[in-house]
Amino acid sequence: MNPDADEPRIVRVTRDVAASAETLFSLIADPAQQPRWDGNDNLARADEGQRVTAVGDVFRMHLTNGGVRDNHVVEFEENRRIAWRPADSGKQPPGHLWRWELEPLGESRTRVTHTYDWTQLDDPTRLERARSTTEDNLLASVNNLAAAAEGN
Image (cartoon, rainbow, N blue to C red; front, side, top):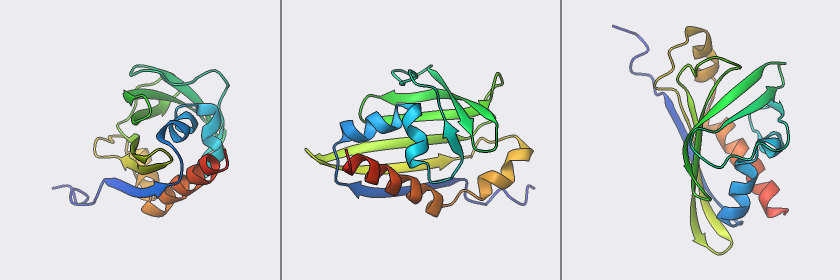
């Protein structure tokens, strides 16, 4: 039996933010904006003009370690939900997923849920990094996103 089989592989945080779902989603769905609010200090930059509009889109992100990731969008509902599976450039995703869900609570208030799900991660070289992604990392991203959105 796998000794890690019982370890939690889904990390999730939720926070209410004083900004509209549209404003928040515009920052999430535009990869060029993502380094502004990344709480993992992992994202260096993304080229302009990659705004996600549908499942099946792929956006490219340059990482702080010099790597490049192709992010395959697997869930999309404008202003409500977006999720992608990252992969090394030109390769298939190894099974982890980043998801953002937005629930409007009024005209200028939104409940934001950010999830990192590595239940299907099958690349042993990525397990240590996956395990090190905590609620604190996700909350830092949500807090940075809130600051960016509330400042707009």
